Image (cartoon, rainbow over all chains, first blue to last red; front, side, top):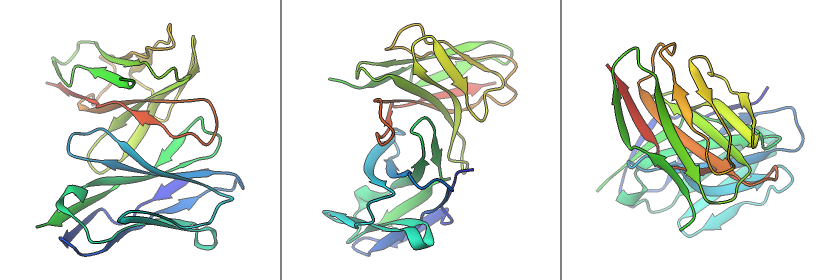
Length: 113
Length: 113
């Protein structure tokens, strides 16, 4: 069975602080795909990044970075120098075959000006 | 512009009435999905369709029905059998291929009183 756990329900940080959102996944498949999505107050989920199980390279995109560690089954997301516009709910998701996506319960991030 | 359209944004119905939520995409994606989002519970899969005239139940299909007569359209009917229909409903589509991400519509917030 597939499962994604986002243990942090809500996080508040002051603007310009760094923040890491945790994501732990469970799967017995050796080929799988991990995703992060952002859901701003408008409600539409916005795709941020995809990582496949064979690529453990970390990735940086501007203020965003992702740390994928198969040894701990984690795919954590760090926002550097947070901004008010980063306030949103962030979801981590797992896909094995591509037919179904397994979403975590989300982490609500509030950046205080 | 290509994308996914869900209408209306807000929908109100009386208990006991069936209601159909619209989802249209012009991305030429084969797969389409319906999710339900409740506070603190993340996204739960209702139905998904990999191809026209075919669809599968997700984790919480009871009380819902779908059709996929056209590639572009995947309407969801919330029936009177659904005990707690008030929720935020998200439609998504995805191109063929196991690694591809899902693209989401803006969502419909359904309130049943």
